[in-house]
Image (cartoon, rainbow, N blue to C red; front, side, top):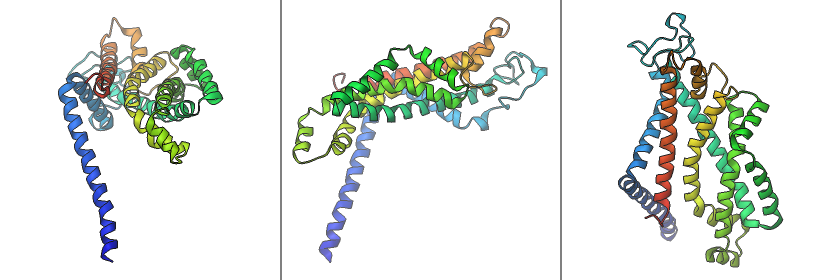
Length: 301
């Protein structure tokens, strides 16, 4: 009886020790990232701040983002309206805070769905090769041969102006990029000695892909995902600016810029604040992605 209890305790202790070791390594890597990638860490803090602001927007926004006040038509920044009002008397600060939600929802949704589908397609293509790889890659080539914005415009216009349709259009654009990276990594991994050893002991394709393929390609996927966030946020703003993205009166940053384009001389604050917010967030994602690439690449350390 004591032997059974002893045997049942050992795996639990080993699992707990393994988790503690992983947590310790994560903390050490995070501290090393802070000291070696200072610009990347500042960018991470900016992204984290925008995420927090988006979450608590209903509690900190001074006004309803779609509420109109004709008495405050195109009011300049003041103590009541810190960033002024637009052509319908809507508070720019409130719309800016709520607009961060749409940008992040589109960004996160697009990247997560693209990663899942891109990994699935890329691993199948890279591992099995042959006719399967050829068919998949020709489809990817066809999608990537069309300029991204033109393809997004066509798909979004076909489906109609809605947030979910913008996400669908951007996912179709991003999938080939992730699939190409995953395919290349999978083709490299499948030829390694440890994969050959797994085959020799009878491991199936699914086990090899999930146990050896996926964990060893996470670094480039994470870097690609961080860079894709900025691209999708810009793409959503572009579609909204052209009138086929987020439908009004939703406070999208791109839609705010589109509405403000008629008042650039008389009300420059309408362009300044959403344009500045969009630029800072996209720059933060790009710098964070570059920092992650340098940090995770062993050749750079």
